[in-house]
Image (cartoon, rainbow, N blue to C red):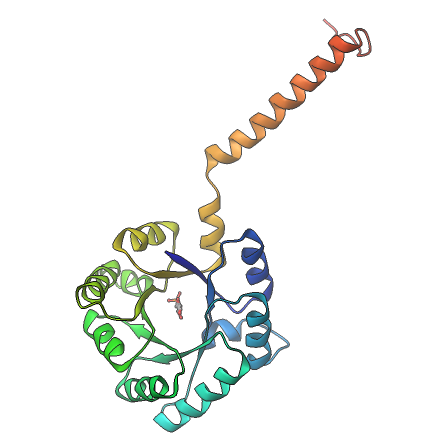
Length: 231
Ligand code: E4P
C-alpha cells in the first residue's frame, strides 16, 4: 500500500521523505490554512520539488468552469499534480472533463461505495473515502473502503482507493488489510507507526549493554586503568 502524507507543512514532508517511505502528498484548503507566509501555488511547488509522487491540490470553485480553471492552473505547476475535486454532480462533470484533457483527479469527500463508483466511472484516478469522519459519527468508516476496494477489483476498474481522514495507526493497518491502494496519513500517525514502547526500551538496553561490554574490554586490555568500584 502506498503511503501519502496528509499535510501542507513542508518540514513534515521533508522529514517523511528522508525516511524513504513517502509515496505522495494530499493537501486540502484546511491543511493549507494552517501554513503561513506562502501562497497555495508556492506551497504546491515546494511539495512537488520534494516528492515526485502524486500531490493532490484541491479546487474550491462551486461551478464546473471554475473547477476546470483552478484545476488546469494547478496542473501547470508541476507534472505530478493531481487535481482534487469534491464529490458532487458538478464535481463529476469536472472530473470527466479533466479526464478528457489528460489531467489526473482525486475525488474527495467520498462517504459511500456508490459515490466512489460514480467517481471511478467519471474517470477519477484516485477515490478518497473518509474513514475518520464516519467513525466520528459512531459509524464504521472502514466499511466503505472494503466495499469500494471489492468493486474496483471485481470490475477491474482503473482507479485507486485512497483511504483518507485517517486518525490513528490502526486505520492504516485496516486499510492495508482491506486492499486499499493508498492511505494518506497526518504526520502524527506516521510518527506513531514508527514507535513501540518495547522498541524504544530495547534500543536503550542494547546501547547500555554495548557500552558496558566496551568498558569491560578496555579494563581487561589495560587492568587498573579504571577506578576500582568502591564498596
Ligand atoms: C485527504 O485527502 C483529506 O482531505 C483528509 O484526509 C481529511 O482528513 P480529516 O477528516 O482529518 O480532515
